[in-house]
Length: 336
Image (cartoon, rainbow, N blue to C red; front, side, top):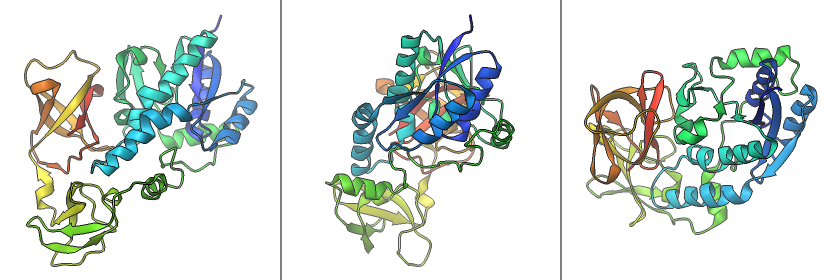
């Protein structure tokens, strides 16, 4: 009897090729399309399932998404942080929905079209050009014991080629870089539609001088340079957000370089925790940039990350710090 796997079929090219690869590897594939409340991707996902001769099932996750992702996402922006909704959704909504359906159909495994690897329950990087381990670093150890990432050894160009070879109906579909519940990418407008967003306020210098007016603190993030509309003797960067006084602090960017950062709610994956300093590399943003660092345990389960060579630029509250030992994700924590 073939092993069963539930695949999150989004309607994009990555999950479509993941389905094909799983079938070629001998799995019995059960696609599951997750409805976030927009309906986006359903027709494409159905077309892929039909092309591959697979059953199509849909589940509505909009309620769980609102409670566990959308509401905290809005609250974070209104308090001056910059949230990372996909990293929250994966362990709390998306993968639990896949695992629930897997239990219903008797599948041992769940899979997605993410560019990462999972070996022996350890989360590892995918190919450098497309690696998505950063966004998956909040998955739990128990979840990772049941996860397959068929695209872990592939780059995007190879996946596109496989989609074309298999005549998959989404082979030429553009990639989506937006948050799934904000398909137009305008998160500030999405927040405005929900209501209770902060009013316009002052742009100020680090010493408190008023430099201009802003549209509301939810339009800005730490380190931002574009779209400020403020002229002066140098380029301005957002260096702090003050939600209490509805102010956005602008500087020349020099104060964005810091020697250390602190994170909380650490999710350890490859180690049990820290009993002393640990050398590793760290990503502070969803990019391919890693920096050598030393992790030090702090009070209340916090971890201090100290740069080993050059300072960190704009570690942003609400974003993740992800710790790596070579290709393996050691753990992650929320920057605070």
